Image 1 (cartoon, rainbow, N blue to C red):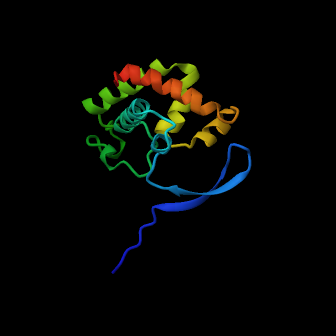
Image 2 (image 1 turned 60 degrees about the vertical axis):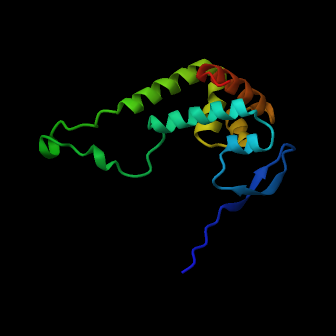
Image 3 (image 1 turned 45 degrees about the vertical axis):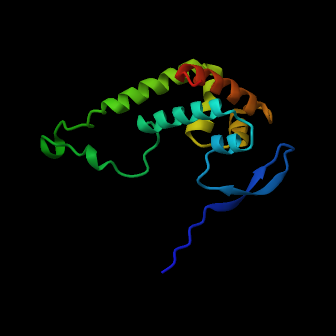
Length: 155
């Protein structure tokens, strides 16, 4: 039996000129990886963004898409005080690093940084969602990644 896996899809995206364009998108490639592969982000900026995304995921800050089977109450039965399990030290540490990095980016830069690096939103979509002019996002994202790289001490 042969299984076909599709890694690419065609999507309509708005180009820099405002016109819709049909492009092929690799489903496994993050927006940061896409920008880096095309020379729009330095290695330092890419690594900083990837570290931020990894901390965001490790801290469990993303939306859950499945049921948490580990959160069942352990004592007291159905109405007992079981509650949520305590987060691990790795989760707490990752949350602390994430919060520090977002704080280092600053309030004006953290929005696009989170949207592109953590949520996986494309640059054009992030600009549109934030109400920014076209191509402003790349400059602001680069500034944010520079601050985050300094915070993570990426050489």
